[in-house]
Image 1 (cartoon, one colour):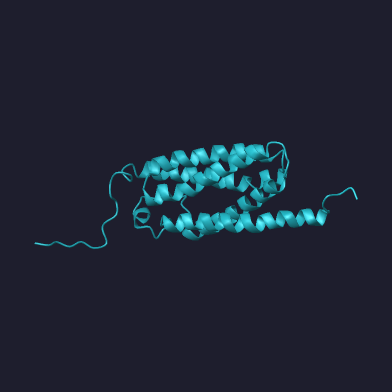
Image 2 (cartoon, rainbow, N blue to C red):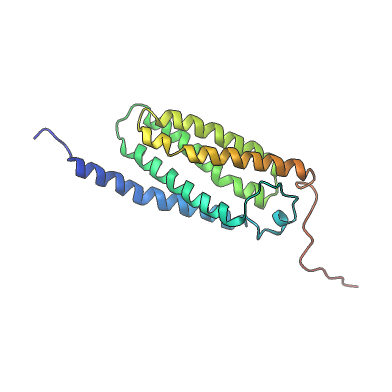
Length: 185
């Protein structure tokens, strides 16, 4: 017997990784958005002057779910490639961009740091491009799964830039009127 594992066993190993990575990334990404009150239900965001290219809320939810699934599958492919040259560095790049991704919503929606969020999303895009190049020699499909994410990040960076341009005082000025005020004399 010259094989350590059969092709079927190898496929099962990949799917075991995917059964952990996909739900974990979708869950953490969703929690990041929920805990930072991202989207149109955020009164601060709703009060901003939004560019015409801003899609409806359901587009963001659908797109991020699909993108997080792609990220999880991509990660599972590289995790499954034990012993591949450059795997450790590729995984480091992946986790750097992923942690930065999870930090974007709290930065933008929670802390209202529009300009800093723009710099962060550009950083995420650059690290994701590097990740795709690092993934390609290991698993080409893993690199290709990052392409829709990079396209969305590019769109999101343009959107973030326009929001920053249309709302120069969004970070310093409280654009949200308090829900209730009271005066005590």
